[in-house]
Image (cartoon, rainbow, N blue to C red):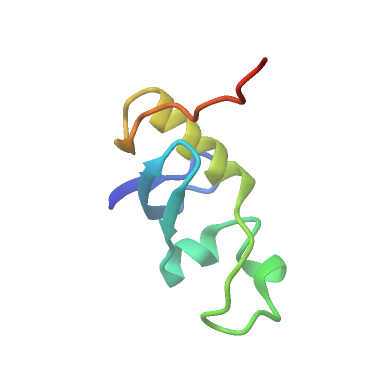
Length: 85
């Protein structure tokens, strides 16, 4: 897992980009509290440890970092498209 900081709120998380379609993000309490989408009022009422929706700003940052080569994409093979006949 590689550290990545959100450009919006500066929360730092750990990220593993298994493929272009699959990303793992590991949040800690400090990062979650800094996030504008997951922390504060937006995150209240969730049971601790329950799955949460993604943060759109961080999701965009992960995509940008992967495209720029700042984080590794473990399986860099493109998805095969539909076979056209």
